[in-house]
Image 1 (cartoon, one colour):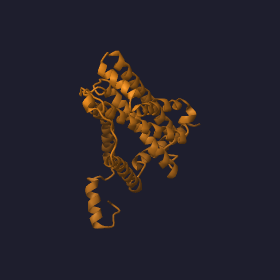
Image 2 (tube, rainbow, N blue to C red):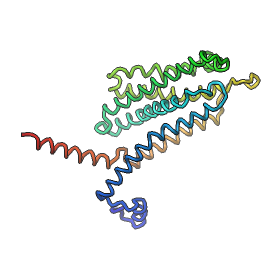
Image 3 (cartoon, rainbow, N blue to C red):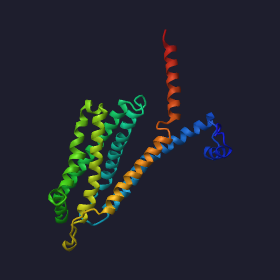
Image 4 (cartoon, helix red, strand yellow):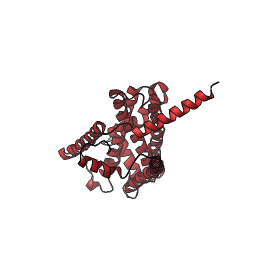
Length: 272
């Protein structure tokens, strides 16, 4: 706004700035608002994915009617979210030289969170299979057996491998510290989470209560174009953001720089 050469651009940036002058008062209000929004984000994640899981849980369809879905969906969202962050952050870190900003410590901590949530998701898979047999419900038992040994058994066991087995390598620190291994594991996790949604929807619908309505699903050309188009749309927006917007928050870097200078000065004063 202050450096704009064109009057129209100056007006546009002035409107978007909403009176921001960079004063200490404004920065204080900004940090308070930042903390409030960060505090609201956590319950928002829980509520959004819990409500989404209710779309399945309240249905009477075998394979959907389960109380395990709310925590299971929340853990899965965090799990796939950290996998996606690693898939995007590791190439950006390499190609744009951001090793000093996105450090190995950051990658390792994200890997730990991914391992923890992956174990929760794996527990959900085991509990879902156990309850299908323990409950004595013939329809739930049939749905679970159909998932494991039916027409879509390959998708089911592939998601078990991707979401449960593959992440066990993250127990090793050498793997967590290796960006290449982390990138590969995160890709496998994303494939597994996509297969999970596929299995939940397709295997529950293709054989329901009425044998007369049974059938196998095969994607059409429009399904594939919609699927690939959404991926392309996401990548296009991602590349535009990387090209036009700062990948690292400049204000946070300035704050950390000032704090590091203050701590360094205090350390020097304490020295005899």
